[in-house]
Every structure is written in C-alpha cells, then in structure tokens.
Amino acid sequence: MKLFRSVFNSTGRVFGPAAKLKDWASCSRVQISSHLRGIEVSAPGADPSQVVLYFHGGGHAFCSVWTHRELLGRLSAATKAVVVGISYRLAPENPFPAGLEDALSAWHWAQDRYAGASIAVAGDSAGGNLAFALLVRLAQLRLPQPAACATLSPWLLLDTEEVRSRLQLKLDDGLPGRFERASDFLSAMYAQGHSRKDPLISPVLASADLIRQFPPVLIHVDKDEPVCPPAVEMAERCRCAGVPVELKLYSDTMHVFQAFPFRFPEAHDSLQLIGEFLRTHRQPRSP
Image 1 (cartoon, helix red, strand yellow):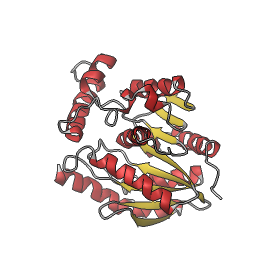
Image 2 (cartoon, rainbow, N blue to C red):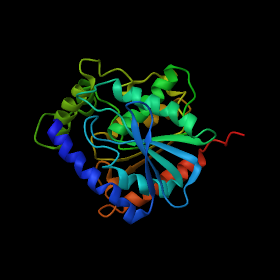
Image 3 (cartoon, rainbow, N blue to C red):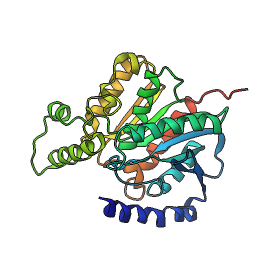
Image 4 (cartoon, one colour):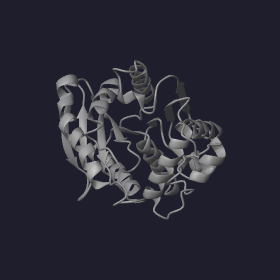
C-alpha cells in the first residue's frame, strides 16, 4: 500500500507544480498545524475575500493536493476564489477520525487566516465525503457552517450492507460488483472497526436535525455511477430539511469527470456552475 501510494503521489508531485505553465495560478504551501499542510492556489483575478477549502478524493487512502493541483487551478479560475487544498491524513496509517479531525482543524484555521472572507468547502469522491462529514460534525457541535458546500461525485454511503440493499448490487464482474468490492475494501480500511453507519463516515445517514443546519449544497454526479443514488438521496434530504440544493446529473461521463477536461467538455460546464453557485451563496464580508 505505502509503495503504491508513494509511486502514485510522486507523479502528482512532479506534474502538479507544472500546472502553473498552463493556468498561471499562483501556488504556495501553507502550514495549518504541526502535522497538517496544504496548498493555496489562486488563479489570475481571484478574489481574496472568497475562499474554498478543498478536500481531494482518493478513497481516503490515495491521491494528494498535488494530484489535484490542475483541477484546483481551474476551480479557482471558475469560482474567482482562492482555493486551499488540504493534505489531510490518509488510511490505513491514519484511519477515521484522523481525516475528519484534519478537516475540522483546517476549517478553524481558515476562519482565522481568512478573517472576514466568505469560506466554502468542496471536494470530490472521498473528499466530498469529508466535506459533508465536516458539515455533520459542525452541526453536532452547533458551530457556524461554511458559506456553501460543493461536491463532485461525493461518496456519501460507506456502509457495505446499506450499499448492497439500496442499490441491489451483486458480486459479479460488472461495474456494480467491482464498485462494491472496492468500496468495501477502502471503507473498511478507513473505518477500521468503527461503525460505517456513523453519519460522520456515511453522511447520507445523518439525522434531519443535523441536515437542516447545513449551508447551501451543490452536488454534481454522473447518473450512471454507483455513488449517484446516495448523492441524489442526500440532495432530497437537504431539500426536505429546507436547505437550498443544486443537483445536476450528468450522463456519458465518469466518476469525477471534472478532472479530465480534455476528454469531457462537461467539466467546464460543471466548474462554471459551481462558480455561479458559490457567488450566489457568498457570505457578506465582515466589517
């Protein structure tokens, strides 16, 4: 696991910084706590009073801010915001709740560093899971929520039995079967004995009382990917709780297609809609 992840992430560390040659976004490292770091990406024209905390995907075990650097640059350009990618701790060395603790630390840090700014959270796949888990945790603590939450193909249901019963998956050689096996492996590695029904692990299972405290939510997902049904359910639960929601189901794309703009022109559409969404729900700047 360590060797595979090291090779995979090394590729990101080589090509991630090179993204500046394409988007001309500034990129600097930031120290969030003694062990937690991140990168601050700002495309030309980005408004420093608008900030997006971004949690990268990778099944809670892979990828890094550098594998997502190119996406962060395009997100900054589309949202006209400063985007901060968070290098949260990964399983299996650091299982739940390490990543969530890092997300909470990053949220508190951002409130101090960007005092007076409108701060939203965003993430893809497992990073989308972490973004929603952060909303759940803030709701549990009765703390202020971000201005908004925007997620790409969020992985919101990690409990295998729930996945199997809701999606009626079978262990075959098709996509559903492969997804179930991969989901079970990664979620077990992340939870390591903790109940995967915990809404801090499977945010779609959060109570209505917690969900009604959420900020405006945006979810973009392909209608045929296995993470879609729980994402649609989360959107509906938010609507029922009175939370403003924008859900868009794409077709003929793939999981987190926004990371592949040259293959999927829909990637541009998705990021532009996220930019409009965040500008609509920006919080007034503090005096």
